[in-house]
Length: 201
Image (cartoon, rainbow, N blue to C red; front, side, top):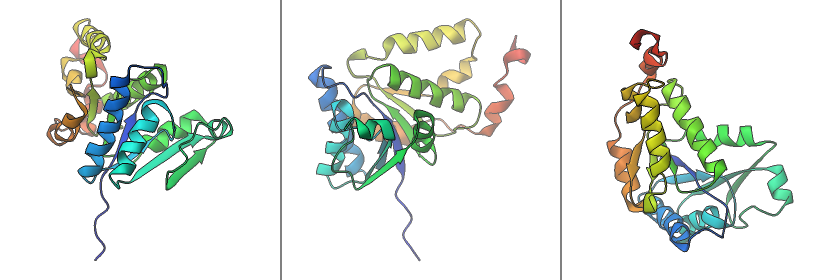
């Protein structure tokens, strides 16, 4: 009987090498932690910034990492050069879909507008009962504090229900991510029943 496939998580992170070195180091640490835990990684396929550091952390520990990258980024030579598996797609939408599809969790590291957009899509899909897996924000140096405050405000103003605030878990350091995934509150397709707040007005 073949061995069960190891779980794979989707990681969102930035590509800027100009961010504070602590964020780059945190991305590499997350790669090491996931590899050491036997958890595979799927990410955006980049070779610089937090993307590159995440990949290096996985690779130096002998872990499995898959990149998903649009063709135009290949043409710009943004891809990591040492990935065993790099899926080239035609557009950003396909990239996001393939990264999240089949993942056992989504993890967001500090990043820019692309990271925010990917994270918010995952949260939205979870709210609609389409994506049911844990979502973890690695909140190094309080990076996500303003976003968390905004989401809490959305619930306070009844654009979301208080239950929706259980859709993600916030941790301070990369090393906390595997436990956060394991301990995340269960979420199932019944979420669709309260996706519409009409009955809660």
